[in-house]
Image 1: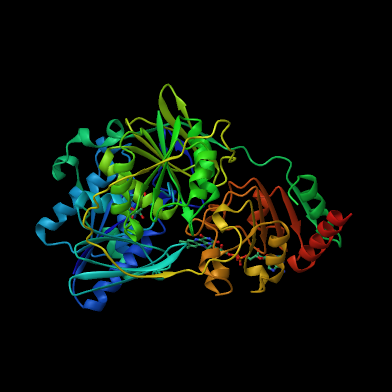
Image 2 (image 1 turned 180 degrees about the vertical axis):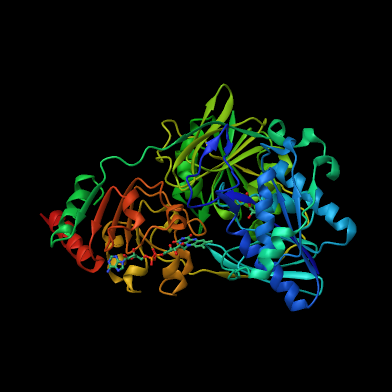
Length: 262
Length: 316
Ligand SMILES: Cc1cc2nc3c(=O)[nH]c(=O)nc-3n(C[C@H](O)[C@H](O)[C@H](O)COP(=O)(O)OP(=O)(O)OC[C@H]3O[C@@H](n4cnc5c(N)ncnc54)[C@H](O)[C@@H]3O)c2cc1C
Ligand SMILES: Nc1ncnc2c1ncn2[C@@H]1O[C@H](COP(=O)(O)O)[C@@H](O)[C@H]1O
């Protein structure tokens, strides 16, 4: 079983996140691996460990600093990493990113077949949750998204997905793109040995030329959308905090009534 | 310009976000309603007309619409002449519109709070990073798809109702690799679903697992009950109630957080709400930083008193 896990380099949730020139600002120190991709790495490791054989390859697409996301995946136990980086990729929309990731999956598959791609359910910077579907479409593989449980066997993958109206069980033949939610598992902590090994690991950097992707198919110029304005929202004005000394409930009620909310 | 709106319906009834989306669509062009599933009732069609739908295009695809790629194929056929398609932004529709965009080459923005035409192009607004930033995005592609969040447009009937002419759309669905083995319906509770509710009262770890007061307060305010992840993880309340980045994103006019610390994951799902109120014993809890009205105190003291006061004011 050979599994490729996509990991995204995103700004730390606790940091001051911002925009520069219409794209999310990413720097080496505040950025890390998208938290939800830890669940994807964990899901892949569990499958390989249960099978007693196999390989987990972590892949990221992003600027030079994005390699931090791959190193994080190696710390958790991924066996190999790949970093796709090319200036022409900057400003890609989800479809451009899917084109690049699909080409990278095909290249990884050249040396040995890839059975599964596992992704996180959303990147916690943009939160679009569109990449997994776009990638499945681009690869023309089975799409099993928002898995809160995943089992693999007999050339098939089966997931459970919890939608607001129903709980579905869905099966599909491999190869498949699976996105996992944070309910799917509890990510492990890296151990010291892996942290040391990840620091030294050689991570190949692939460019668009290596992938055979035409630069005009990706990047800002191919993007179907453009951020035309981004501004920080002002903090809420006139905030009131009261400490309960016996009548805070009454004060709260009066606030709601005055605002026409109760 | 024809602006297609994918109608969300529950037990045959048009949901309120669909009426909001039709209202938004009227600002962009002439709305056409797209209906997937069993054919709509006469009442549903009439209501779509009231909100401006010139046509109601029906693709009777039944449960096949559960496959994102099939739903997308049906919508593509039904919206061939529309340069804009509007859907209600949910985890499910995000998958459908991604497939639709792959089929049609459209540009997509999801989780939008609104959209307008600027120089013939659709521009959307949305909030990102737990609603700390406002972003405006232009859709450059010939065709635009916009996923809008519930509660971001005030639904209002059209001044001149649409004809709501029902048109049956013949669709050819693609084969799917995926097999839906089972569909177990989630029992729907009475009242408005969390994502659509105008008021949400949420309880977290501070409730200790007792949701009686939270539910009573929600009912009094005409709202739905929400929860933090810790509360759903404890099994105190079902997963469908979870508000946050990995749960339901809500944008009600009023959000009341009771016994919730306001972790960044939680804030990401509620920070764009109109008025935010919190009740928390710990004055240093981050939820106070984003609350218009914060009470440092115990929810077990504050909620009963607030309920009593509101009831008294209403009676008087
Ligand atoms: C990948 C990931 C995704 C996540 N996604 C989500 C998500 O979508 N939604 C979500 O909610 N969380 C999410 N979480 C969890 C999140 O980080 C927090 O752990 C969680 O929101 C905390 O829940 P809480 O506020 O109920 O509990 P706590 O943080 O323990 O806060 C409880 C609060 O109750 C107060 N309190 C106690 N007793 C009382 C009383 N009697 N009256 C009033 N106040 C009282 C305390 O002062 C405290 O501030 C996610 C975590 C991860 C890692
Ligand atoms: N640039 C990227 N590099 C690697 N993986 C990505 C990238 N963008 C998105 N992903 C993967 O796709 C998932 C969903 O992201 P999104 O659709 O952007 O919310 C993430 O959890 C990642 O696993």
